Length: 330
Ligand SMILES: NC(=O)c1ccc[n+]([C@@H]2O[C@H](COP(=O)([O-])OP(=O)(O)OC[C@H]3O[C@@H](n4cnc5c(N)ncnc54)[C@H](OP(=O)(O)O)[C@@H]3O)[C@@H](O)[C@H]2O)c1
Image 1 (tube, helix red, strand yellow):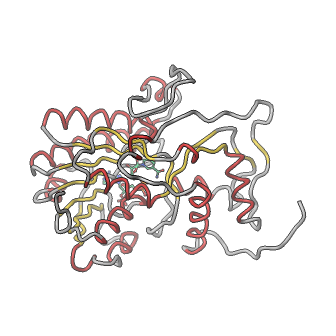
Image 2 (cartoon, rainbow, N blue to C red):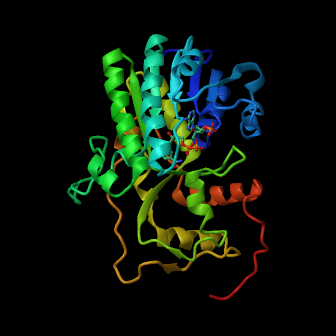
Image 3 (cartoon, rainbow, N blue to C red):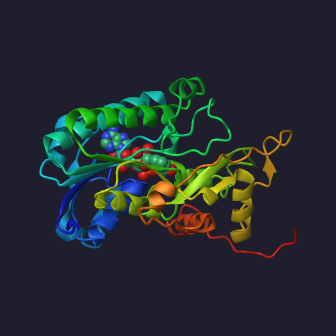
């Protein structure tokens, strides 16, 4: 078993929701971490400096995904790379180029630095968006999203993540970089950063009164700590290879189930009770398997806990008012 404590690793987009947790766990395990951020002086990254071990073993490096030199400097001298930085938006102007070119830049810089392994944070969005998939097929790591479908439905985030992951595999193969990919579903749980990221807004909008109905759709959820643990697990397991779907199939819920769980835990918020599309039957979940990551020893937090931890964190960070929980009849 190789020793990892004492290794130097680079985490791109270190101040983000998932990457902050990756940095925290790496520091806890004794790694020295170079975290790339676009602006090391921005107060939104200051939570990283508060982490245990940060004073001794964390450096924040200024880097932009489209600036190869900045990435090369951050990655040079590292034993490994966790590439988590990416815009998370459906605006094609903002997401496609940084996701795709940025990922290629990271792999090229990793090849130049001769790092041992790169772990890339891809997404379920690069896996399941395919209208031609047989509904009876259990989604696994062999599935890829259909680029034309992503384009035609203006799902530019999924389009960008699919092209970025394809580019990562091509570039890694060509440059001889050892690449492992984690494909998480929608990530929830406690925020470390002071701002609210896109996947947390998905839940916040059901609590702060900004939406009056919920959509007739399904979504799988995973805890942010589990996603960070999965990154370390695939980095530290020499036999790990290829892609890893990162979620529990039981973590897939219809939006109607999400609002029901939220309302049970937090009845004091104006949580929607009506579906925006009550004329059609409820959309059914698709089936997927997490067998591959489970075989590495991964265990997942229950989805109810993910939802609970998310709301508690939003309250603690001041993004949701603490309302008095009054008893009322249904
Ligand atoms: N959250 C989810 O549900 C989810 C699910 C599956 C996969 N993922 C993937 O996980 C990764 C992290 O997502 P997240 O939810 O943690 O998002 P996040 O909190 O928005 O973090 C994204 C990070 O990327 C950085 N970034 C964006 N554009 C950049 C650029 N042009 N140059 C350098 N850095 C840039 C941001 O840096 P700044 O702070 O400078 O803006 C930020 O730190 C992404 O690759 C995302 O696609 C997320």
